[in-house]
Image (cartoon, rainbow, N blue to C red; front, side, top):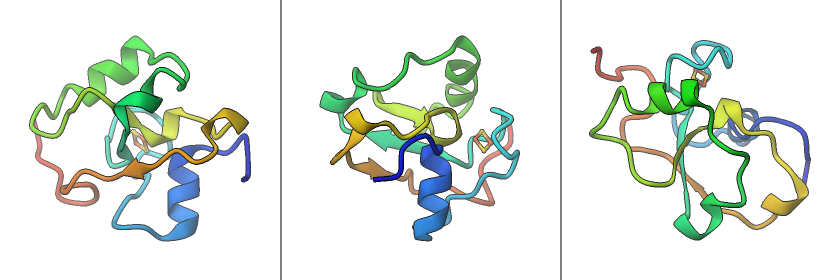
Length: 96
Ligand code: FES
């Protein structure tokens, strides 16, 4: 497993779904929104208030284990974790 790269970048490299990094990890577009398993959530780096704010801007997509993939670097302790994508990830996210 490659460590140190962002989850978003890893997903892009694997060409999954329509996940993109529209704002290039500037933490505002939410196109990199991903879901982790609830049991893995506490193993992730602590969510910043800014990331939390942006995730909550689309309440229809938020679940308890939502994160922005561009804000999390892959680490050894994440080996084996599953990442899922919201149905609406990618171009066409609702505007506020
Ligand atoms: S790439 Fe825009 S918020 Fe993550």
